[in-house]
Length: 436
Image (tube, rainbow, N blue to C red; front, side, top):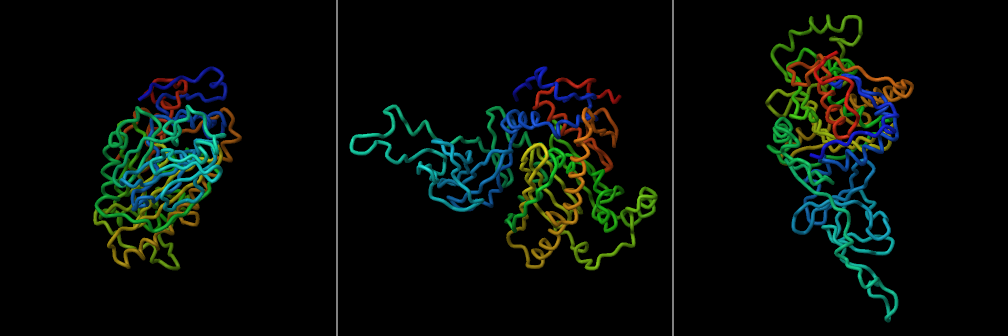
């Protein structure tokens, strides 16, 4: 990978100083400063990362396309006639007009609506109206060569039915980039059964995109913010599970597992939640079916939250399977695009169960509503804390490592360590691992 370029003195004036080398302190201005957001577009999203683009099952036939976003850049992802997936920026090479407005569809070719410049499904320019002029007049310059004016293409990699794109020639091979835990869970969730799309939802959250990255790497909040998760046994801090990180700390597998001990943990939970009002073991649903859907995998995993740097989350919450993708829309706004997943050949009852439990995740989902509101409150609070920083010490400080428990913020620090390196900020105030 490219070595990070340190920020210049004028860039450091924005207050982006990192007090601790173990990333247990995060400067609040990374969530609010437009200069930081602009730097992310260049250094991060166009840097040595694999940006999630689409699921391969969304593009079953030649000509199938979807439009997606890499930060502020619209991208067309299409399956060409040879079966290969290609991706390119959604702007004409002529005058920059947007080529495709539809979120998905099928096309023989891509034609700019302005001057009808035409491209094949690999992004190569194939047609320019009046290229040779008319009756000996006009036309393009003699030096014009269509081969030099194709669309701005990305390098593509696929793994486990997921398609990724990168602008960098030095981005690590996709399996290395994902890491062993991500690869194993993608195999478990998306490969051992053939996935199919059940539908899409989109949620606008008035918070910075990195706040959502913190949220999905944070099992500490799951049993505190979400009352029903503890009361109905979806995720509790007494459950078996923990976090596993890739070698760079950027990708996190956060998971909880059912065990025979769960039923006997009510006394421990009651003591842990004493005085909070958050543990209500006698709480009941008017319609309890949502919390009674049996897991359709027999390995006991209640939750699997797989967070892939920078903007992808592959998740299983009970029987809800979904790919979540973040579209940053400025320092204080992010769109969460959710693709709900079922599987070919499953029974009508299994499909019904997945549609039922999809009420967990989405704009009106029990979990997502609370997460979205928490991120809004965080963004609002951060705005007033000029020069401040967050404190990430749950689970300990110093070394960033795997855990076999859920009450921790270590995986969040892994995200920030990688983010800091790619963004090229000045060195933290203390050496990593000091724990001071």
